[in-house]
Amino acid sequence: MPRFSHLHNHTQFSLLDGAADIKSLYKKAVKDNMPALAITDHGNMFGVFNFVAEAAKYNTSENPNLIKPIVGCEFYLVENRHKRSFTKDDKDVRYHQLFLAKNTIGYKNLVKLTSLGYMEGLYGKYPRIDKELVLKYHEGLIATTCCLGASVPKTILRKGEAEGEKEFLWWLDIFGEDYYVELQRHDIPEQNTVNEVLIGFALKHNVKIIASNDSHYVNREDYNAHDILLCINTGEKQSTEKFKDGDEDTSARDKRFAFYNDEFYFKDTSEMQQLFSDRPEAIDNTNEIVDKIEPLKLKQDILLPHYQIPKASKVRMII
Image (spheres, rainbow, N blue to C red):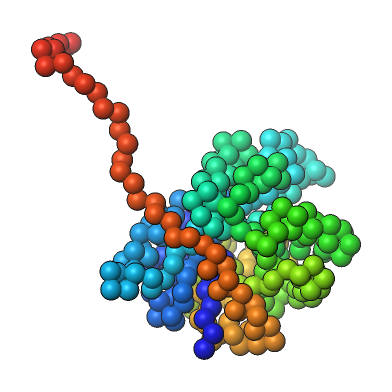
């Protein structure tokens, strides 16, 4: 059986959006003989140390390469991270963008991007980056077309295939062989439309396709608990009619944001193979990315200032 790794996963550190426990993800991935597992939380890297440390529990001296932890992040991308004044007609348009760290340089650039997202781009609850930062800190990173909320899919849906291709080529020009078409299949009409166009781009520009599932919870039966989490996030009741168009735009009156269906869970390899039976290369190409990525060693000695205290010094207490 061809091996497969999930490279787009949200844990509980995707605050009030992801419901997957890191330990449960590893347990399911190892049981399914997956060679690697990625963490790609929204806009932050809060769970990274925990994530890498959990992998070390499985990678013993007897079997040091049982599962490779891959560090990534799904960023909020905007036109101008410094802009903080918006109107009803000029909204804060955010796109999603996934990056994976290939090596130590890539990891440091992920850290830089997430930090600047908060320091320079924070608006409301969203740490935002822009293309200026991508151009500056893209070394050592792997990028994909991400999800339905990313810039290439959104441009295809809003402006057409030609403009979508221009956006696609902007990313391809920067990342080259480290840029991948990411296909997700959640039976969403807009997603099905975008996927056909993305496949066309991949064939035309010789870009490899990978399969993912944008997992936000571990098992299908966790869907309801995840839906409740989204209600807490948006301050809505679960009984409110759902606004499901594959977007985060909750401007529709009397409706709440919800995921389209219960397909956003951590599917096992056989489920993913069945889902992409017509595109087996999309399963196999995840192994190419896994092979590109160098294991990260994040554990370091704590660096604290060393103060020399003279032996003859006296401590005076002020009361």
